[in-house]
Image (cartoon, rainbow, N blue to C red):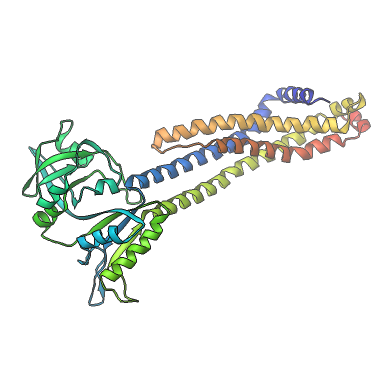
Length: 406
């Protein structure tokens, strides 16, 4: 029997019991749809997390002031005063895997413009900070090295601060008050969004020259942090070791004593996020695949019923010359057609439900082509696996007994 003829016979046989065929395919539809939806949501969430991490900076490491032990009590990170500007210069000069570094301090301040005011974070840094963070400007420019040298009262606004203070008007050249000091706005940064992990608004910030914040707002000379950019992502781990070794030597920390600083590699956060997303996607895919197995069992059950109902038909076909292989192919193809049609509808169901979830809950969706192909092949494989036994049973019927069956 030619394959095309068997395929047409399978379609006609399934068409005789449309409702039963639809209900049989339902397990496949739900299974394939669930697998595609889960993978799409999982991949989209992973891509969003990686995008958020990439927005924090390129190959970036965070060097921060460490904890202080006072009478046996650790008071938490950010309390030491040993991280200074010369450390930042030494990191760039003496660590081969480092391409750039930007020192910084920070403080919370109330900011006022006209009748508008906003409580935000003011960070003092140097112009290379925006290069390290890979942070472009929407309008205006950064403050200059001369502004840092002269401790000029100029400021760069994050997009959130701009919205609350200026709305839709242009802030460039306007004067705002930070604390009790007037600052001239020279630039506005492009939106960065929330940061991965902490979910903090990266745009709710104002940047000013490092010396200005140190001398005029804080009255301190030590640093709270240094943002470091490694030459490549892979070299960031080497850079981390080089920075730790250099700072321990500069701060005269003896072997065995704890660091008075912290070094965090954002590549570690990215890898952890990717691994967590992969594990969750795999687990949810396995759970969703159970529906495919249930659909396969449904196919086997219906095909066994079909063999029983069509025993006399099978006997007639064998009596007029059909071989066991012809009968086996006929019933196996019926199972494959059920899986193929169910899988195709399941793909559409999965894609539609994915975008419905995305629009309803504002979750990112990314459906890779391999998910569609793999789901379809898995559905067909399930159909073949569970359809083989009924097909084999049909092919082994005795023609004489089958003809007598009522």
